[in-house]
Length: 266
Image 1 (cartoon, one colour):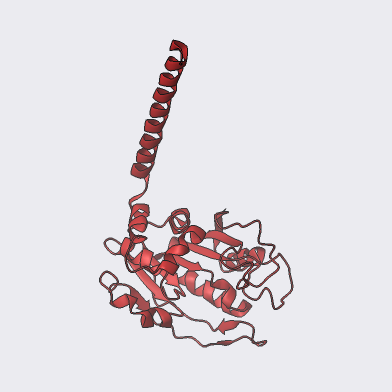
Image 2 (cartoon, one colour):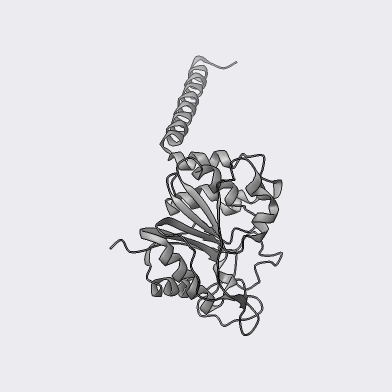
């Protein structure tokens, strides 16, 4: 039979646990209250019924809330999403920007258009930018290339591209960065995420869809951008940078660089 001391200790332990639990809940509530409205809007968009199970399954890997928060996107911005695919990020950005901002999609929008997403309520205001440019294959056929082009808009607050820079050869990347630079307002931001290649590694069949992060920064600096910050959100220590990103041992867990660039304000 427990003595009085044991009983008192049990009561004190229960009381301490209750206090700590209450403090934890309060801290979580405070943290939620401190989140920017845009971040809260992204969380809401993540619960949309328009998102497939496959898309939801990628949330833990792509970390959209943290990534967009790092880029400093807010609900008042005019944002261009380059090469949106079938709209994984579009489904999050469009609802969050609908009331006070504007989302545009540019380059490689065919799959997005064919998906029917832009016909859904809440997505009809997404602006599709028609790009007049020569698009083809690089000389060795490994990558795409694109000639000089304009996005057709000016004064944009932010341009974002997720795992797309690797699609283009050096000339194509140069022309893409130049178009982004021209479209942004002074002080506008350029957010880039892509699969990491080992620095200075020569081309081979395993790294076609990877980009040397040092080269990526150099090319964006050459285009006139300022380097503002990087994030290790998508750093993966167990990606040895040896294999093509589609291989079973790597896919869904590639090491990706996350860079925040800016068009100079002055």
